[in-house]
Length: 176
Ligand code: NI
Image (cartoon, rainbow, N blue to C red; front, top):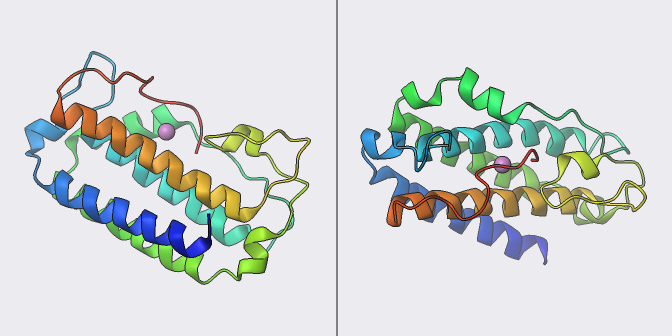
């Protein structure tokens, strides 16, 4: 996928989701589809955490050859920040605004840098769709994978919002 179509898809996904998420009441956003599963509020919180962690990766990945970054304890980040108690409209605004900035950051990266092979990386640990450590990857792939992870969780949120049924997929995976 070319960089421009990825950016367009990313912006559209965020804008559409932000519009839909704003329609939810706080009670609807807090509702867990099943005991121990994330609410829509917590999914959006997780996506804020993903944006914050990947912000660093997208910037630092331009200044260092190796795409090697620390991960983060995703469930502990969500529970530790008490997203269930946060103001819902502010969370949606933060999430959408953070992604607007990340689109701006990525748009400024030279295309050749996005495609530059990176033999050293830990995307076997960081990426949602992992890359074996024995194969080179690119900064462009890391960004595409971030967007795919975001869309995966938006689909999970939509299932909770529309059907009220438990998600078919596991509620979470320890990546991105
Ligand atoms: Ni996730």
